[in-house]
Length: 343
Image (tube, rainbow, N blue to C red; front, side):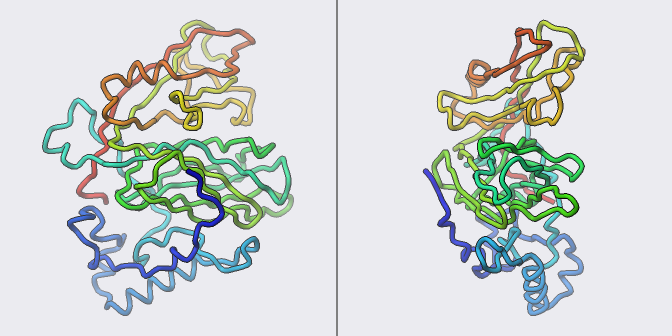
């Protein structure tokens, strides 16, 4: 399923419900969005509406590509008292073998594997030095779950439209009851001045099937996001170990995980995107993966350890020009449950 440039920005301008209007039975963990409850409790309804409008104005900017003013950040809740920069504190969830029948009632119905982010069009050409953030916001708490985060002094060099951003997350499974949001704020390192490159939000419905490819045309680029919904999910952490080779040696290559569907292969490590000649392998042979979490359907949980190990691929793996043996270890499997207190 492909969702192109026809994403309707008007849906971000719909009326935003107040916290007390939310159906607590359907959304038990999102009754209040405020990061300063005591202050918000002292506000009248009209003051809260005014605060939300002011916050909305601050994140609305003129997009030269669309030639219109657009929302550049998530606006799916009442923003009065809501910190858009607050990172999610929700963890991985309980180990699968520790889940009780009582806890299992709070299991998530849908999660997502973020497959790739590419800059398929650049008004500045290639190569470019990209930094900034790409993050997801899910129904658990709508907080920042970072997928890509680089500072100006550590940009990623993008040489062509085929290059993927070197993603570092999510660090936990993403959970969506209705919608999931992906937020982009990318810049290009310039001399002497940096330039805004990509800004905006991609929204997807939880009942979309996948893999899903969608575009964000904005500012000086068009970004392509590919992600795959997973029904009845569990999260699994992975570890790669070199079985034969010198310790602390440079590791250059690519590690990806996936099934027979090549469209959903997830890059766990790409030495070429590290802006260096490789990364050092620890004395225990472990490779520090940039991503080590994948989401699988629970129905396959009993076979996941062999299933994912079988389909982990090493591409162009070199250590001092020698091909080495490797081992894939499924470290742990986690149930994706909905916490009752997200703050």
